[in-house]
Image (cartoon, rainbow, N blue to C red; front, side, top):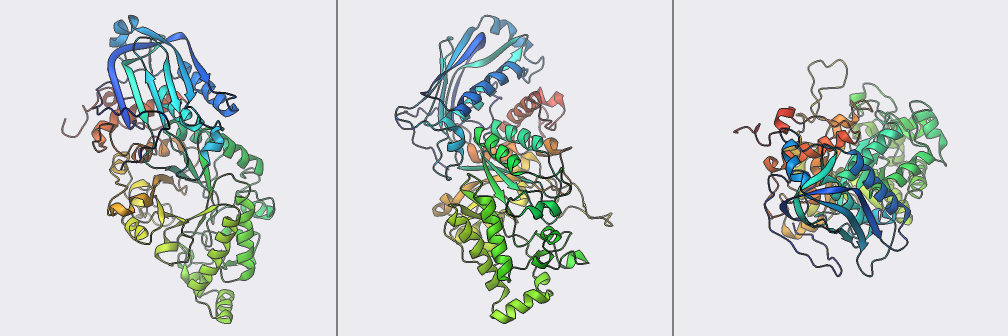
Length: 563
């Protein structure tokens, strides 16, 4: 899918190339890439020259961050000997002393954080990176500070380390790059189990390294309400697992700021009207079938309980709750959820049935009124509502045309969402759910398996086609996609290993869409590069899990099935 953005006064020089065997370091792979075969080393006095008038503080910090990674990555090339065979060539190589960062003529200077939260489709993430082989200054040019940040992440991936020297053996290097899709996300559930703020910050760092630009934060659910809301402090007081397992207002603002400085938008989700049992801990009168047993009759997982959506009081409470949170966030997106609504819960709830009978509404009517109220509140705060697919496919609600739909039950459902002309984010459980395949977590079920078996390998996820079963006229409805971690069996102890490097898979699908020469993405070409980013993540303090024995990582393709 061609979505190359216009580059102002810059001229695109797109080289049709096949990646040489040494270019295994870039993830996601740039849209246009031209490399040579000359060694080039970083000077001991290498420096970034920031040619931007009154640079924003987060751009200055990004440059300092890039300096830190260059100094401390110390990643040996993934070949037998870890680069020892390069030494004689590198010893004779020219030294690169400077990378100059500049904006295109006429570009407006705004902070990375400001650029990162602009509405989808209006952000400028493209950049051009040129590195000569003769030691003359390299250049990084973009239309925005966000584009400069994306280019800095690419620049940092180009260098290997051996015997005190950082170097590349692919100079000269010319990259012209921009995302194929505007939304590249990662979704984390922090309600089933709590993650300390430090874990979220580390995850945001790793997301930024692979150009993931949206943190979909599923912050509350039936099991806990760890979010502090100034207007409703009782929700966290009674709904969090403990006073220590709460995201305070200050925590949230810090996380949002930290994300923004790394080019990441925070899309918060408060799932309603289902997945809300924990609200009954402070407002039992608002919850139908609260903690009823057997839970499986009333909910997809324990505990049972859903908002009494037919009640005007509950509708007003929910709209005000969502508005209270949304107004504190810079993102233009906010999710009200809407998945896995259990109708039996409402059928057996006396108060809900009383409300429906007195008004003559059906449950579908009541859900429509409820959703209109919450979405009207979001729209009044300047937000675009985001929902799970059931709101469109099962309930056929009246939603604004701008509503974004997340397709999760099956990748096959994308076509049905597109047929209703809604923009979508691919989040399919059959490709992108990171928690699948760990076995059943429900007790007293020794032979059970996870509902979305089997385990979703990176290579299976990498085969996902964002445009499958869509007509060409529907292609622009696809905003992008994300991988997701639901946390029934996850927490801070296994966060890094269950997410990374698998979550980088979708970042390349939705940034690159194809290889630089236009060939389709394929797992054989991708694996050595994914090894590389995984090893780099470990160097930077993220405990990403191994993809293969190291013997295989050092011998690209040697462990392929038919090698």
